[in-house]
Length: 265
Image (tube, rainbow, N blue to C red):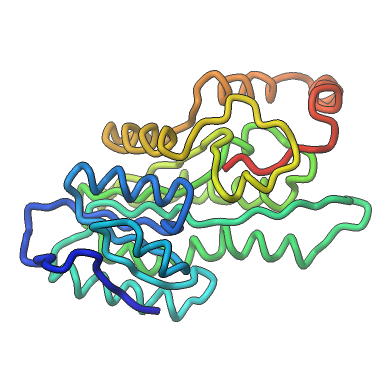
């Protein structure tokens, strides 16, 4: 685990610059968010495991750690706190996650289920523990959920359960952090083209680019939205389908997607 800056003459004494921490910034939505905020003049702490990929985000300060390693998370928090020099962190986007599918529910893979829950939910909890002390009144915490929470999908038992947990976590945290004036946003993307979704073996309707996703997210965060879901046509369709009788919903899902559904981000 380490921390580096891609700017040779970065001055940490600047106090007027807003700061954002982004996990999972090595690729996909995280990398797109890092680039977006850099263009907006923010100080960006780009976090991830791939130091070479992080180094390609020109202007960001790379913080290299594995979110499944608790000690590394704590060390990263100390690095960032020191780098901020007593200034608060304005925004923390806990974006990192993973997806694996249960291909045969009759031979349920408990180890796979645990891996996904540990990465997407448990690790998020440890990141919250480490990074919340860096936030202050008017700061915001954003958690990466998924629009999969709106509608159960085949093969997505592990992924969907982990993101449902993140959804509840965000909703509950929002209540408890309100007194501290720390906002909490839940991000629920539809299909976004990322290295994670590139592995999917099924059609992904209304898919958007990671750059488009970053713009949706940043816009929602700037408006202090509690829930940021997009693209609207897709997410509203999922919400509509979720209100159908269970038997009809199952029939429609089988007819339209078969058994090949899964990760949305």
